[in-house]
Amino acid sequence: AELIGQRPADIVRKLMEMGQMLTFNQPMNMDAASMIADEVGIKIEIAVEKAGEDLLQDVVDTGGEERPEPRPPVVTIMGHVDHGKTSLLDAIRQTKVAEGEAGGITQHIGAYTVSVHGKQVTFLDTPGHEAFTAMRARGAKVTDIVILVVAADDGVMPQTIEAIHHAKAAGVPLIVAINKIDKPGANPDRVRNALSEHGLISEAWGGDTIMVEVSAKQKTGLDQLLEMILLQSEVLELKADPHRQARGAVVEAKLERGRGPVATVLVQSGTLKAGDVFVVGTFSGRVRALINDRGQKIQQAGPSIPVEVIGLPGVPSAGDVFQVVSDERVAREIAEERARKQRAAELAGPAKVSLDDLFAKIQEGSVKELALVIKADVQGSSEALAGAVEKLPTESVKLRVIHNGVGGITESDVLLAAASRAIIIGFNIRPEPKAAALAEQQGVDIRLYTIIYDAIADIKAAMEGLLEPTL
Ligand code: GDP
Image (cartoon, rainbow, N blue to C red; front, side):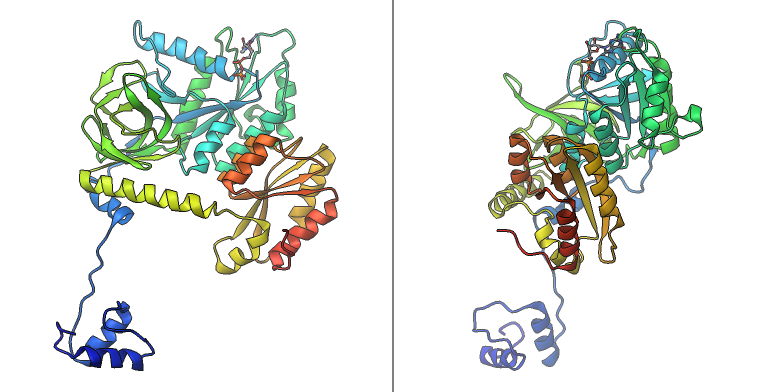
């Protein structure tokens, strides 16, 4: 009122006429302010002050126009337990690193890079789909290519199928490494045949899945596998702009005696440099030192290169985004705001999809697809259930079964559901205690049934908003 030369009482009256009952010292909304200003012939401009997270983009130096350049592929190895994931990672590391650099001793920092004919390939060091999906659940997509290891003497097993589903749910292409071909009982064709039942048809058989026969033990077929990775990455045309402030993902983090909190960051775009100011998760700081996978101190790391970062004030989580910014004060503000929000979110509990609130979410438009993970006591039931779900008429929401399998609900199922905002349907089985606890923590809805019809009826009712709440 003072600024526009009006009496406060007149403004309050005008507000009342607009249906806004405010007293002298209550704030009014922007629409009301504009209308009153209009009425008295004054033009106002509304300036919104940015704060916290909204400032992030303003303090990232993108280096002007985007100049993307080819970058190395980032590979994760998956497969059934004992099929040779760790052996394969070690075999590649040993042969390739030794070849590349005389006496190069690799350090386990969570990822490593090898050189093949002058081109680089980065491997994430934690094999298995659990780690992969846990990172995805935190919003990090770091893997470009999945290597699915299948032992030629053992064939396609439950975790092989799980890995296929996890890679598919993430939309990441897959190359098959048929391992242990040195073993007397090895039968690669039986593996190809079994994989074809899961939609992976070998190029040799007219399909489009690359399959390479290897032996991690005898170190054969490794070169061919690496070449196939490079070929696949050419098809993917992987690119990133190295001429900007770095952005990456934490692949591993720990507290180390003497060094303090240490995080391995996989740079995804830009170039990370010693001295850079950053925000990662709920922390901010300045890069004190960068150490590569050979244990050497380096000055900078470009796209797809994993590097240990020293200088964090705390230990972030795997999957957290690491962003370099140009303003230390803003970095601190953003980190503090995130910590506040995290505390608030922890108090409010998880906000994921459940059958109970599905209809409301469809109505508000925040859910367009319902992903399902189905587990049953026998193969026949899980397939029957998946088949029946896929036949449900779906106008309001798309139904998609991202994984179906046999056995109790595991932590890996829960992680997949959390990462894909899916719900879990169990038929004649129960969750493992650890999985139940994780589901609770992650807010993943688990529904247990003993009659297929009941499961289908519930899903149908939930889509139509007719589900009776379970309490
Ligand atoms: P992971 O559980 O998938 O990581 O499997 P590991 O790498 O731990 O391997 C499981 C077992 O298989 C170990 O005893 C390895 O020595 C063995 N193994 C792995 N690769 C090969 C291979 O190519 N040939 C043979 N004969 N044994 C292998």
